[in-house]
Length: 105
Image 1 (cartoon, rainbow, N blue to C red):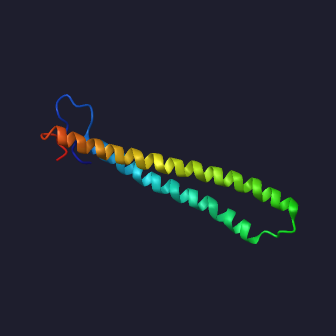
Image 2: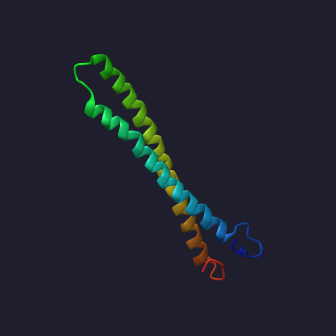
Image 3: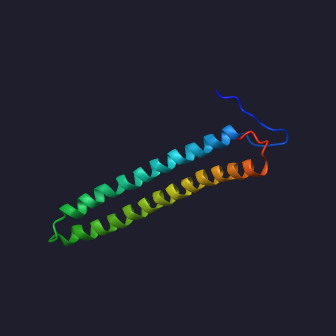
């Protein structure tokens, strides 16, 4: 485990912030992959449905709406986690600019 450098009076550790940012970034890509994988069966179903089956068409439409909504939720989580990751890195850069003696640089 890496040794944490922490200044007097600081409530954060740079290693922990970088670790959280990296984890958020990795999780964001996992959520995006899940969102894409949720849409694959929908695309297959739409491509192979028989247009003469009107009862099945209604079922596919409701299924499509639910899968698209779930995929949008996962895409929102992707964007949110990416934003968290970038904001943490931005805050570390601001800290380095404000305090040149910080343990970041």
